[in-house]
Image 1 (cartoon, rainbow, N blue to C red):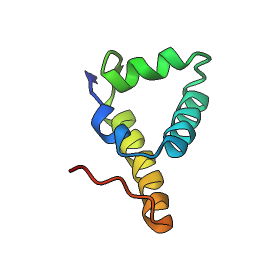
Image 2: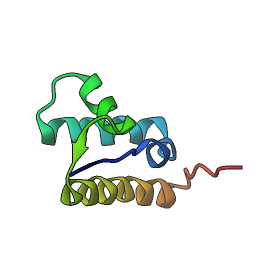
Image 3: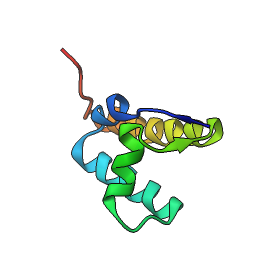
Length: 76
């Protein structure tokens, strides 16, 4: 169980997909405050390797939706 920062990957999502991802994660973890999610994003919460893989796969799901709709953020 480690602290992992998801901020960089999260920033590549469009605001709409950030909101959808955040909502899904909060629902799955049964969190009632957005602050609980932001602690996870900043790496202030310990998560297992399985949880990390789940979160990355879920982000990849939203990245794929963005790619299919042509809404890709490119870092310059």
